[in-house]
Image (cartoon, rainbow, N blue to C red; front, top):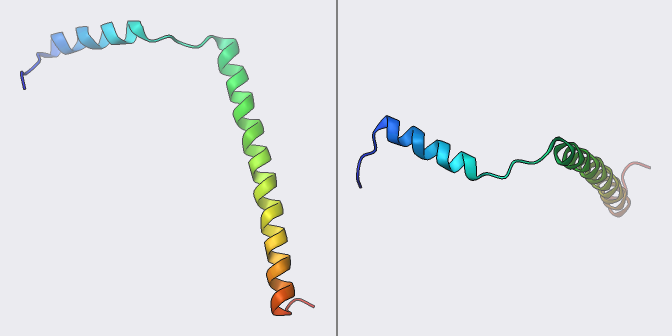
Length: 65
């Protein structure tokens, strides 16, 4: 594999970075909000699933009453 000089490497990096399509501020905000919504929904789902499974296991084992 050929060695690349630091100057050539920096040029290659700049060329590749210029090809990137960067999201707009609006797209970034919308995506961030969607991620937070999904995190909250996931947390609620897993909390509910944990509570149901805890109740079922307690009922089967006859503990907690």
